Amino acid sequence: MAEYELITEKKKQKKDIINSKPAIFLMSLFFSLSIWCVVSMYETPETDRVFQDVKVQMALTDTVPGLLNMSVFGSNEFYCDVTVNGKSYLVNDTTFTSDKIIIKPKLEEVRNPGVYEVELVASLVNASSELSVVSVEPQFITVYFDTLTEKSYPLTLVGADDYDVADNCMVESMTLRPSSVTLSGPSLEMNSIKEIKANVSITEPVSVTTQFPVEIEFVTDGKTVNYCQIAEREELYLDVQVSVQKTYKMEIDFVNAPEGIDINALIDYDFVDYDNELTLYVPTESEALMTSDTITVGRINMSEIAFKQYQTLSVERYNRNIFYDILPGMLDVYFTVNTDLLTENTVVVPVNTDGFDMTSYSFSDSIENVVIITDAETSDFSVDGIYAVPDEQAVKRLSDGEGTVPVQIMLPTDCNNAWVYGHYSVAVTKH
Image (cartoon, rainbow, N blue to C red):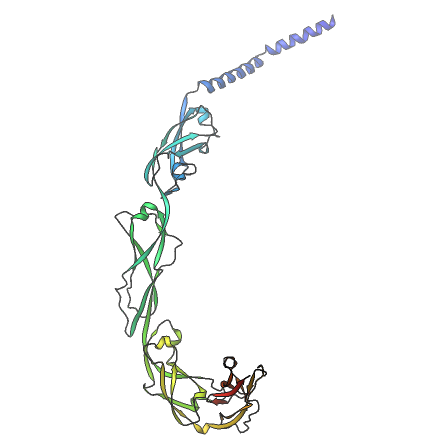
């Protein structure tokens, strides 16, 4: 009986709690919120939301112009405002951003190069099916589609005839570098180019070799060139080579001159057909010629100058490029030798045949009457260490029998105040 009364008492307490005012309030609030949420989701009116500056996807992969190897020239970045409609709680959801809006151009009609008004279509991805795109603004964009091509054009120099030259200067040449350019651009523009001018402006009198910048100009059949450019662009310039008039004292270069003898004190010379001066137009970029008052016009081997006080020799012209059409190939030069400074020695020189196959050749043992000129102050001159070496190539060219081949007279390395006058040869027999 007591247990029954205890259970009855607990049921009564629960009923009192449920029937209490706070409990009734909380339950009413819960059911009200639930009903409000349901009504908000299904009965809330629709609204619009505008997403600004949504980028248009211009990728041409798997499109008609893409399959035709066309590209977009000019601007390929476009932005639109997209209006989306739907339930307000969906449209204004913070997770619904412009990343879920895809704008693409309709390109099915783009089959040839040209400028097209392309319609834009927007769609939603990973968004509720209850949302929809209302409008895209602008709905159409202007796009230039064309194939990228390359073509080489020669350059036509313009303006190079309008210049002045400084006093005593002369323009040797004008060279456009490079003489042609390779353009890269849309085919329609490339086909409209008939000529490319290289315009140069020379405002100051030309006085030195200079590289002038040039500007290119497209000559077309009336069309405007906007997108063509030089492929792998090189620096374009006009190379103007300038020479200046200058007078030099003419000099001779002495080959094989002994180090121990002062050539300037030993030899005086004059040019037979010239007054020892030469007026030339020389390249201004040649630092050596521009900074010098003398110029070497010929060279002579010391072995050509005999131990005589007066002689006239023909000297080989030096540097044929500079003096071409100005000086002859050989120059007659009158030499005066100060014999008081020299001594003439006539000696016998042994022949050195080391390195030759003596089973095939026989050489003379020595060469007589070899003239060696020394400094007059050299009192202890000796033939020791002097020898003659046959010209090996001349020996090899010798046919059967006897003949002569030239030799080189070798002086000791410490004999720097002497030279060999004349040319000598040695008798040789081929076995």
